[in-house]
Image (cartoon, rainbow, N blue to C red; front, top):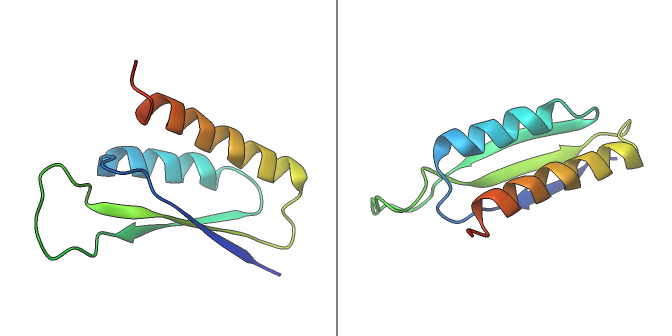
Length: 83
């Protein structure tokens, strides 16, 4: 059984979304896709990406889920909680 999840980081640049996706793809049992921005209006402060969609495959265990949570927490702390 596959579980899909979606995560969004408001205003995060495309390059950082790609970095997160590459990082998550290294975790066993995780598949990641970038979700394109759906807005028709261009906003310089808005990312070209609306979010990440990732799914867990049947062979992903609790270690994989814990690792994904660690990766997401790292990026959230780095980019969403400025000092």
